[in-house]
Amino acid sequence: MSDVTPEVDERAIIDALRRGDAQAFRELVDTHQPSLLRLARTFVPSTAAAEEVVQETWIAVIKGIDRFEQRSSLKTWITRILVNIAKKKGTSERRTVPMGSLTSDGSDGPAVSPDRFVGPPGKGKWSQPPARWSDLPEETVLSRETISAVTDTVRRLPEQQRLVVMLRDVADWSSGDVCDALGLTEGNQRVLLHRGRSIVRAELEHQFGGES
Image 1 (tube, rainbow, N blue to C red):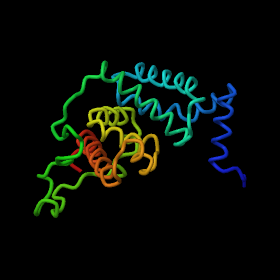
Image 2: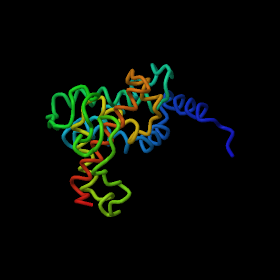
Image 3: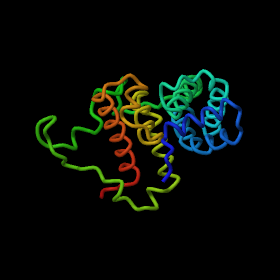
């Protein structure tokens, strides 16, 4: 087993990038490009625009690596750059499609219709429980149509919900990293993640789950 810790390995990558090591940069791109592209796609209306966001992100990484103070992980720093670029580009290019179940701040209001519960508010039980993703046919879960539905639904979430869902479930950040990056308490992060996931799950159930 290697004695090299992740921290030491990351420092070596940063040093290599600062030396202009092309191979280190290619490996970094290969590692993070897919998740960055998926994250960017939730802010802009097309894959082409998302690719532009990611390209601009890598240019910013190259230009800014000497100023990176390593107060966060390299992945966190790169993702923050992408989010800032994507938000600016998305503001001018993306039309927000309202969803009746969403709230403006992404924190208040039901993530699932109250009609699907029986009993007092906050203490009721499901009268119509959502279908589990694992219960859907594998070909549905893995299909391009499903991936497109998930992406479109996430794009319509309020900004804070969208960021939390994408950082936790796509970029694979820890809850602590998300709280630090977005200035959230652990409780707020947990609520935003739950609501965002519930809306995406309900949309998948609506489109693909039928009456089962």
